[in-house]
Length: 242
Image (cartoon, rainbow, N blue to C red; front, side):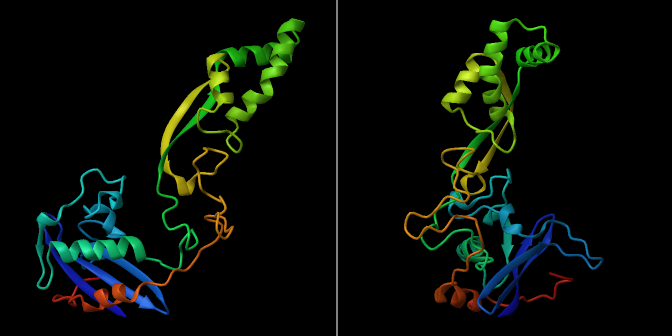
């Protein structure tokens, strides 16, 4: 299958086109909002599904704050809000079906949102480190410095740092050896278990042992999904490009 569809038009963007390719069991869907003859477009292109409101709120892309709703479309012949939602679902769950990070038992993995925290040295730790380097630190203080310095380095080294408030982190924060540097939110499929206890990247499947995200897995697109995509009306206009 290799077909172009026109979803409809949007005020400020013009016509929205999508290209659907299903070759040798691999599905690819891309789109463009208002393609122009000079190769530009009035809106987004590529994985434009992230710019739209989905039927299931869990499928909405968190990076897009103001998502385009179906009511903003003037739908092309053969399209309506429900069919658009069905199309978005197929796009969300089956695009690049040969590049799945998990095994058949890990379909629901990698979606949980986790807050990660980076830590840095406090001014106090900087001062103690400089004092130890200069040899001006008293012996009792130096023993205390040696006791905590390795933990501080673990907590603040990018490749080793736990990015959540573990007992070690809590203790170093309370004693003012480290402080927060920045916070960010990632999905669990992009977080290692050493960074956060709920991280799933390279975590083994309890059924087959496959380590999540260690390679790309292929999952066959269901026959009913292919039949639905085949049934979509072909574009009634010729796009400048898609």
